[in-house]
Amino acid sequence: MNGLVFDLKGKVALVTGGSRGIGRAIAVRLAEAGADVAINYLRQRTAAEETVALIETQGSRALAIRANVGEPEVIPAMIAEIAQKFGRLDILISNAASGVLKPALELNEKHWHWTMDINAGTLLPLSQHAVPLMRPQGGHIIAVSSLGSVRAIPNYAAVGASKAALESLIRHLAVELASRGVNVNAVSAGVVDTDALKHFPNRELLLEASRAKTPTGRLTTPEDVADIVLFLCSPLARQIQGQTIVVDGGYAIMG
Image 1 (cartoon, rainbow, N blue to C red):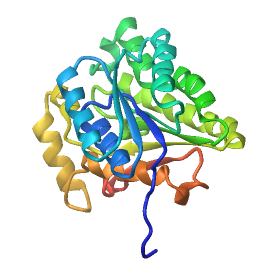
Image 2 (tube, rainbow, N blue to C red; image 1 turned 180 degrees about the vertical axis):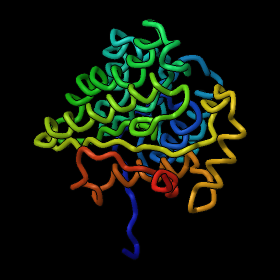
Image 3 (cartoon, rainbow, N blue to C red; image 1 turned 90 degrees about the horizontal axis):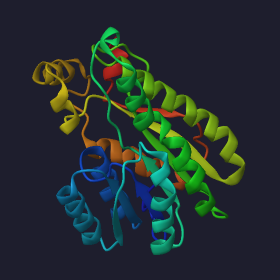
Image 4 (spheres, one colour; image 1 turned 120 degrees about the horizontal axis):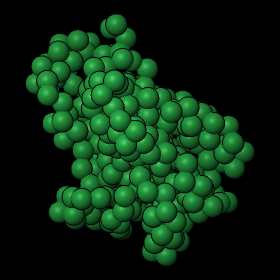
């Protein structure tokens, strides 16, 4: 293993929700490995510009695209902009996420559809438009999930169901796209202290309890998640297909 490097020079990546948190960490890590990176954002223009600067600091080209990927009709134009600037796409990271945090019996139809559309529904049109740019060299599709896909978490019914749907779609895409040289997987993050946790009323209690329960003795960071994404984009992961890799320091195995 001595001298082994992750070299993504000449590759182009798209990271949705890439302006901050886990998305930013992934975008920067891919740029550190040599990839040119397009990030998608919705509201945080300043944060997007900061992420672009971080990518360019690594010597990579960067592009920020404002779009709500929860609306499928905007995706063709976003992919076309990437094609125009870079001429190809090798790595698709579906990271943009949102959702309504309420008990299941308090969810209305709008809550449900919004959460499902942004967290799970967007992966299909993204893949449909991205895969043609991956020919003939193949590529990688990676979605960012969460432990709520397999665990019951208070007020997480809609988000958890959307992440479960996301992981199921990953498996089906993996089977369909393997023959085209496209690896499809998911990364499931443990408790990560990002802006998303600010919407949890019991944030501090959740963070402390999670830290105490994690065998490694610390919370998972965005950079921890980014490291596994980079690995999945490397030749070392060529035989990993249709899997959800959990990055949580052992939290999930503690019951």
